[in-house]
Each structure stands twice: as C-alpha cells, then as structure tokens.
Length: 170
Ligand code: QAP
Ligand code: CO
Image (cartoon, rainbow, N blue to C red; front, top):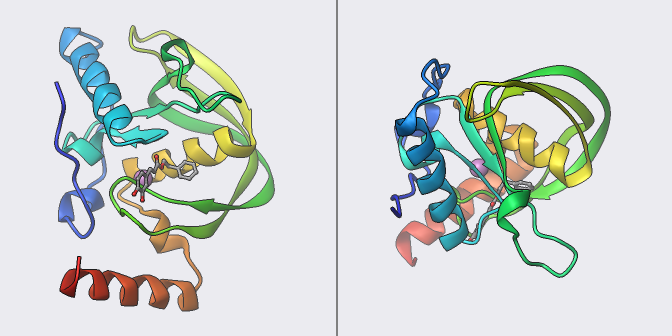
C-alpha cells in the first residue's frame, strides 16, 4: 500500500528510530510499502521514519545508466552500522521529506557498512560515490538528523528563507 510521507518540520523526523528485532511478515510488508511509496514519489532513498515508522530500516534504490529503477537493485538495509569510513565528498542532496530544496552536503566518500537484510542475515557492504552518500543520508534519518542540519550557516539561512516563502505561496 501507498503510505503518507512525513514532511519537514514534522517532529517525528527528529525521533531516534529503534532497532529491529522481529524479521517477520510485518517487517516485510513495511519494506514493500516503503518501496511502493518511494517509487511513487520519485525517490532513490527512504527511511522508515519518513512514513512515520520509527524503526532502523532504510531503502536505497539507485537508477541504472538508462535512468530506470530495476526492482532487484533495491537495497534493503536494517540496523546499519558504519564499520569504516574514508575521504570526503560534497554532494548536492535532496529529500522526500524536504521537497523542492537541494543543497550540497559534506559526506564520507567511501564507507563500509554492516547491516541486516529482511531475514535478519548479517551483511557487509562497501560503497562509494552516490551509494555511499545515499546510505549516509538515510542513516541520519534513523537518528533524527536531516540534511539541512548539516549545511553551513549561510546555506541553512537560505533554506529557512525558502521554507518560509513556500509556506506563504506553496
Ligand atoms: C536521499 O533523496 C539522497 O525534493 C534520497 O521534489 C539525496 O530520494 C540520496 C525527491 C541525495 C543521495 C543523494 C526530492 C523527490 C527525492 C524532492 C531522494 C522532490 C522529489 C529525494
Ligand atoms: Co531524506
């Protein structure tokens, strides 16, 4: 089913999400509904709290060279932990919970990630570039952090200004 997106400045986006302990059919349904919701909104990444569920669950589904999103490419990441990081990279980010705003954020260039899949199996993933950035962005959601929190003071002011303007004339 299609779920409703939680948007800034909703307080739920500031919650710390809880570890998943049950890898059951309810979790699988959540993952499937999150995927449907992400694709319907033209997203490439989504954390569970963005649909109002405070669990440490995220999806990253990057498009291929021809810009299509192929179902088997979707990464389902549960209870992630950063095991290793390397370098820095500036990437222009957006977020389904902060529509129509895009700005550059400083991230680790390469990461090694430990996580669990939908069945609770432990996995390790190495990522660079966009995949690395997307995972870091979604992991921040699990701790109640948004990409706009990571902007320089000047760019944060620009965001606040645009947000207030959009409130008046959406
Ligand atoms: C997070 O972001 C991300 O404003 C995923 O109007 C960001 O899917 C990963 C979106 C940057 C890697 C790099 C945003 C869709 C989607 C919007 C998204 C919008 C429609 C954002
Ligand atoms: Co986001």
